[in-house]
Amino acid sequence: MGVEQGRVGFLGPDAERVVPRRATFMDRVVLDSVSSNLTVAHRLPQADRSLLEWPLVSGASDEHRILRDFHNFDRDLLSANVSVNGRDVIGLDERYYVKSRALLRTHAEEIKRSGRFGVFSSMADILVRERQRLGELSYKVLLNDLVSLYLAVCQERFFVGIREGRPLFKRVDLPDPAAWPDGYIFNVGSAFLGNTQLVGRQELEIVPSRVVLPEELSGVVLPEPSRKVGDLLEEAFYRPRYIVPPEGAEVRFQRAGDLERAVVFCSRGKVIGKLVAGGVESFVWIDLDTAKGFSSVDAIFDIRVMQEGKSRWVNIFAEVYHDLVTAVESPGSKRKRGGMASFSKASELVVSEGGPSVIYIPRVIRKGEAPRSRLPYEGPPRPITPHRVVGHLRQRAMTEEHRGILRLWQEARGLDILSMVPGGHTFVRPYTVPADDPEAFRKLPQFIKRRIETRLKDDFERALAS
Image (cartoon, rainbow, N blue to C red; front, top):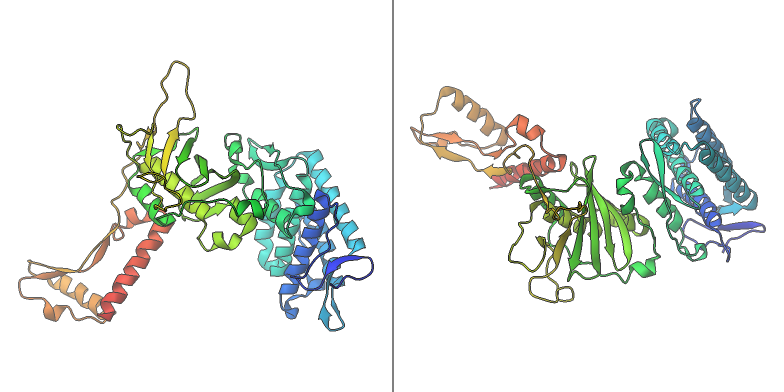
């Protein structure tokens, strides 16, 4: 332990840190904020720490002024934590702790008084625009400051979204601050702040009302997904039978481990919602254009899982969305609506033949009307699923124009096709439908375009190797 007189600190970015026994919400926010910034700085090579030469954030708006205040504080803090006796010391001097707390309180009160909660997205936009000029260290440290300021504003109620320019709040139950692991509240703040643009009045219910500690999460049993997110979304894109209703959809799970229910909305090109399993709530979304996903549980406890595309929460949510828009209802089934979820069978999860099931629950039942089933898809016809057409002979005389095109094609690939084409025939080059139709290809989601390109590349590499 490398704690000096009057310091709350530690040696190195991974060493033990002093936390007050009766730590308050703001105690932990300040400690996590400053230590996160110190860790960012000390993980960079010494040559990249030109702290006193940082360019200041420029601009005359309130957002620029707030960022400059934090910028100046960070320069003083990081400049004071220099090499001592040849060793890098990360320590939080008491005066920096007090100053950080005062700075957060001042600007948090200013934002609450003015009611201008949109400053968070404005400041994030400023940092993105100035990232290259500020440098990576300054950019990351100021993003940390933005999360800290957000948490300082959210001590009583979390700011979770905006509807028609007005902020939306939700009370979120958190464990005792003294029990929080290092970085816990900082990750919670990042997960909530990063999604405020997706939440309106209707989506308010999908924001988790409770955040747990790692030990509670470790006991939750989730089904093992049997299909990848990209496969599920591609099939949902090409074979939609239903849509997610405007008021959202709710599903209940049976025989699916601790998985209890899901609420699903479609908004701004994303499918967003909440999964509940074993009393743990996770805010989840998937971008329908890129197939990238987010889970608040993973963002708080293990962001690498999400970044590597291995989030079980995201995968299960993709299966729920897939079944909502594609599953055929079975009139003879004992289940009301829905059908089979596509989770793989596992002995500890399946207690009867057929495996986990999904029951669709109508969200709006108007007086005098029967509950409506899922709304049918009535949008424009989807293009046909991309499929590979292999090269083949066709009984037709080859024109000189086609012969020239084929000669260029085979030369570009190091092949010799013309010498093998018999008289009275032509050769149809391999192609992908609809990838070779520019208009149809342009309208496809980005993740499907990337998958087609990968398939084409693999086909050509196999052809060249054979």
